[in-house]
Image (tube, rainbow, N blue to C red; front, top):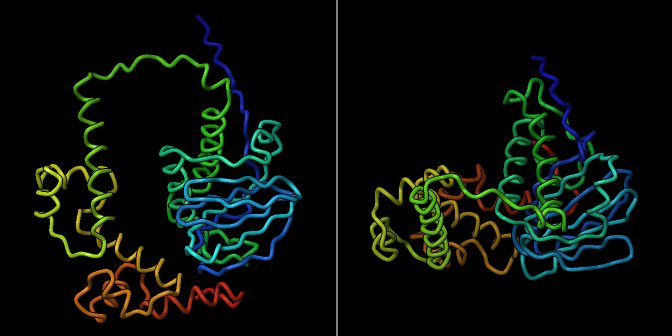
Length: 309
């Protein structure tokens, strides 16, 4: 008996990848704009920005993604209220399917958010440069890359991201009848419960970002055992609970620094640190920079004076 096999159809093929950026902007940042003969999308990870695409202006909010087609003029401006975090990826694609995204503003789901996070992870191990310089036009590659196959993984992840978006928003995808879950109900329920606990506790941490909380307090207030909670966090984000809370505090501090409404002492007090010195040590431990070095770096970037160290 002969095996014929088949060659899978490729509906979206990514050619050259021109840039992959993760920006942390000041609250008053403005990029004058450009146009180019390849596609680009911008996604707001935190905050909001005003975007120009062709002859239209719109506000892009957290979790939203906008596409710029070939030769479309586009720019981005922070709204002045929230210091935004943005993901910007530009690439070549000559398939007709890519025009589905023309002029669209879409909202990401958790799967797409995780795919973007994986792209950024692979990019950090692929490019011999930082990912946060908006004026960098060519991104040099590491030779060899830190991780085997990282360049190919980036291409595959972008393709998967685009296909998932198109499926979720197009009528053809919603009409597909999905097969019933073949996993045992008990296991499915447990997994769902773990995700619910993780979501509940992360929201609890955000609400208590200005406090000093212990694992015992988190467990008591959320009615969950310590060992189970530790296991859930390791599975979901690869961090311990307190490590996650510390990272959350520093990320909040970075946003406050970029918003420029508070000085370092005020930020330290606001986030419940015992002293400005302890805050500075924790900030450098997490980011590799002191708060003042971080502020100077972001300011230099927004003024077009950013240089690779």
